[in-house]
Image 1 (cartoon, rainbow, N blue to C red):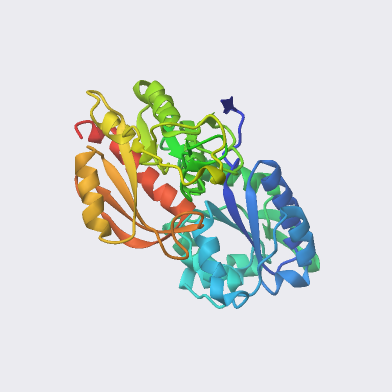
Image 2: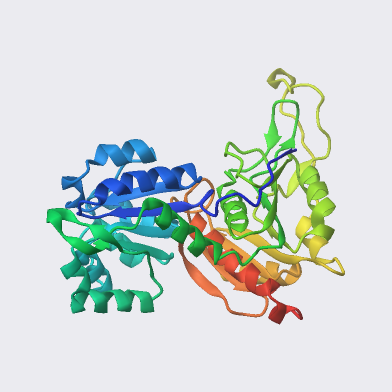
Length: 412
């Protein structure tokens, strides 16, 4: 077992994915320092620049500071629909500096470049740091646009007053990067709806040994379970991640219990079952294991071995049968008849929710960054089959878990 515990000083930005939009203003140079503050707070930052912004600061500066390619062109990699992927992955979006032009576009839903197209698709919180000349800022059109975006939930930081370009003085100066970071942290902290809760997540495959070098397993990468664990921690939960063999980096602030077999996973989960508020069982546990494990490598010269199989422990059924069970979320990987299979498992295992993944085709399921999935609930409120980025699906699952853990759901 390895563990790393969170502390009260940990930034809400730690482990979060930030979309940083930089637009064409003199204050674009400040965005480079803002980027540095975001990354040192533990965030992964994707920078999107308008063409105007590149006239003030080069793309190479932001690429070097973020460690990621800067996006500027909506037609770059059109087959991957990059603006949609970035929008779905982001936990929070920042526009700094935000010109009068970008504010107007956002208010009216204009999507004519990479940044506006991404922001129009995004459903995450939006933080805007205006920077422009005083006359432009105080213009009735700009103020109307700001009020409209605030009505929709956008958070504005500044602007401050001071010296502006061309010798002007007055309101319109972009807030300092430290102020913007503080505002972003406040926005993210407001979404800590799992604070004080203990959540157990399982992830990855199990490996059931045949001999010392061979095993029965599956193609699970663990990406889905790890995304859920990261999001649960970011939302304030105390998280235990029971992980099968994967090649993923351990999430910060999450207690990780390493297991290999279904039996080890079962034992680790049941040891925690009485101490957690919810279990999200995203691991792809092998259904069968060899009755006997050879103590030495089976040689092909000895002929084809006969391997007798037996069922592995049914951890979900065991959890569902507990008298005082936690909230239970199961997963089902299916190739056809998704809803029927999901509803059957939902009822048989006594689950609160089940996520039914479509597998067996490219771009969804094992190893992919996206899932074609539906969420079915024991009390209804289903979410139909659609394509999700894994982090987006993780948040949708945790939205439902938070609702089930709320005082109003005490009699579930």
